[in-house]
Image 1: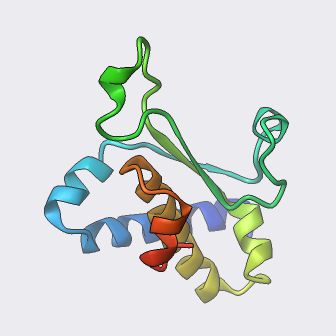
Image 2 (image 1 turned 45 degrees about the vertical axis):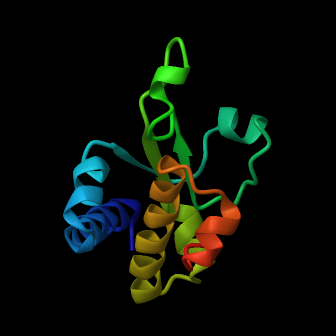
Length: 123
C-alpha cells in the first residue's frame, strides 16, 4: 500500500470506528481533527517521544480547556508508516491498529492515563 492508500484506508477506518461509538462520545470525537502523517515530525521527537510512536493526542483534555490561559485545540495525529511497520505490512492488522490507536488517543482526550487505557484494552 502506498501512503495515499494507507491514508484513505485509515480515514475510512476512523469513520467506521466513530459510527460504533456511543452517541455522547461520538459527539465529542467528531470535533477532534485527525491528522494522518507518515512519521512523527522532528519537534515531536525532540520532546522525547519514540521514533516508532503510532499516534499522539495533543491539546487540552476534555474539561481542562478553561484551566489554561490559551488552551491548544485538541487534535490527534496518526503516524501511518509507523503503524504499517508495526503490523508488518498486513492490511487487516493495519486497519485494526488504526482503530485501536485512534481510540487510545481519544482516551487521552478524555483524560485517561496509560493504566486506564490498558484497563480498557487500548494500549
